[in-house]
Length: 255
Ligand SMILES: Nc1ncnc2c1ncn2[C@@H]1O[C@H](COP(=O)(O)OP(=O)(O)OP(=O)(O)O)[C@@H](O)[C@H]1O
Image (cartoon, rainbow, N blue to C red; front, side, top):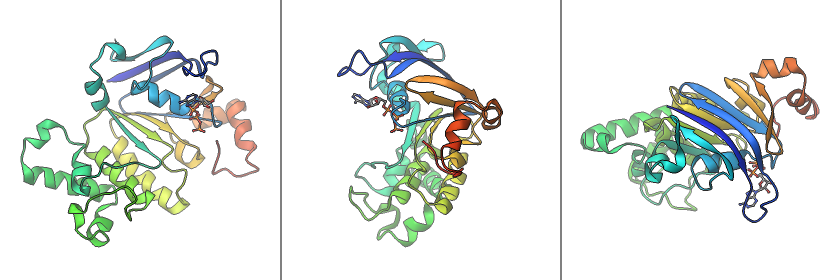
């Protein structure tokens, strides 16, 4: 499974402004591509195009050599799991929220199997503990918008759902930007398990989150101006590198 992305895009409200200007990306199973750069550079727009919330005005996005415009939309979206900074969880129980990541084949294997998979994923995502100790009805606690679950807890439920999922593409959109260093470390640990064997697109503002990516694409006003590993980009001593330096010596946050 791989995704090739080569597009020009402008939002309808402002058709003369190319928010993405011929950027190309290649996602493949087992590889983490991090997209980073200044605010407004077009990072979130890339994730919206891959999910086909919009279509490019030029170029195409291909999944296994097939233009995604020719693929059934429901099927396409089932191939992609998105975890973002502030996940909005459907108003069903925690259990159902996690089980949503399973496919029909899994559901047919019966209740015990599904239960086992849900608990396993929640444990790996470091969520089992708060689910069983903090939530009144444990896994059967309904998740409501404005519920008492913190952002970090909702995120861990979203990660558990990604862990359980067979979707080959995982998009993580700024999931660590509001976390303290300690929680970030935990989330990154669990996330790396969710990433295994998937084609991952990681959008992040924190150096600690992106530095281990297989490829970092540095985006500036809709164009990828540099790409490589963290070390390669530092050696290049170009835009990525000078951007890090503008952080007044803070090597932890950028973007
Ligand atoms: N729905 C929209 N309609 C019109 N313009 C938009 C829309 N969403 C984003 N834009 C514009 O497109 C450009 C790229 O936005 P995008 O959100 O993709 O950037 P980003 O790199 O993800 O930024 P950030 O790091 O702040 O999240 C910005 O100039 C933004 O104002």
